[in-house]
Length: 430
Image 1 (cartoon, rainbow, N blue to C red):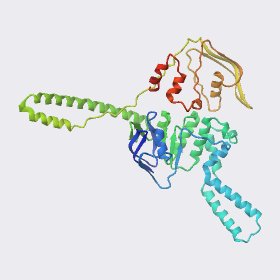
Image 2: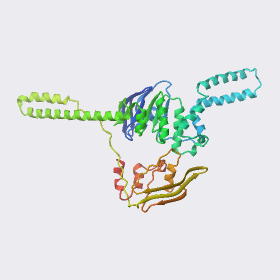
Image 3: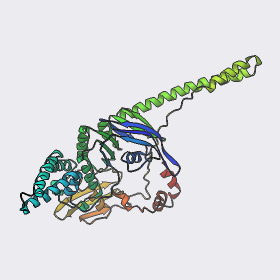
Image 4: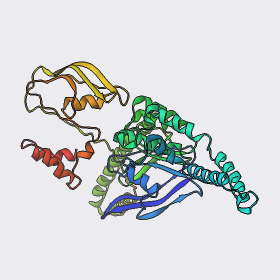
């Protein structure tokens, strides 16, 4: 369906890709992997034609429909949930508008024998047939099924989209994408804002999808359950194998170990040959043989070991002060939004050394509880923070708090203390 031919991309003199070649066909479910900054999202934008390569081209089959879910989307605020999701069916909605117009004309006009009246009847018959072929009688039930699968409740359907958090609005965009009749799906971190039930639902949906999928995700289990092929971007080139993510990682490691062994043997052979050359050079009678060995050595194709992207980020959460035994205690904490009681009379005791996971379906109050603890929202009940406790909070929508005018270095330096400001560059390069 899609072929990439000698794709190269440069930004300000920096080469991101260099002569990439691959093909996506029906039934391919591809894990696109690589370290952050390797170009995964850029490659999806190139395939979706949101960006264009510096060199090379993509060949896309005629009538091939590509659906693309980026990581960052500018949301619209003009409709409620169900109306926004129906926008996936533009052709059907246009026909409905035309049907309504024609029916109004037929009801109000009295020139029953005129050519215009008869033409309206003919057009209504034709577009009604097209409406049925496009799934006009099924799209509403299909939309409800997708929304429910992604974790929405029927009570959400008439809520304005602007009332949903960024994570839930990403689900709306995912729903619209899945409802369209696409041949290729380009998904950039589709599980980022999904709970476990919605992830399982999405897995089942994608496994039934008949077209091609190119998928970026940090969820290894999700990748293993979905993919049958892996493309890894490393140092401007790609490794492409028809294996699921974990099978590919294990296979690549085996290849690298084989390369290391072969290189070790080759290095030993080269070293022995160089010793012979040095010995023969010392004797005039062996000069011809030395030249022969030099020529032979120059023709050896040196074995190179594929680069391993195995750098691991390590974070050490250091304490500025030793806190007391009790870190946090709540008594009878309750939170209500209008008629929606999120939780009622919650008692929690956190002690020093605890590592706690807040789990539950989306909308059950996990983020709300976190915001209560850090003092972002009001609540009923009692909350006590322990002695010498300093709270660090990383929100789901943390990016919204960043100053887009500052560089990464400036942003982190601004948050650093005198004790760790000198290590900011090392931290960012981790």
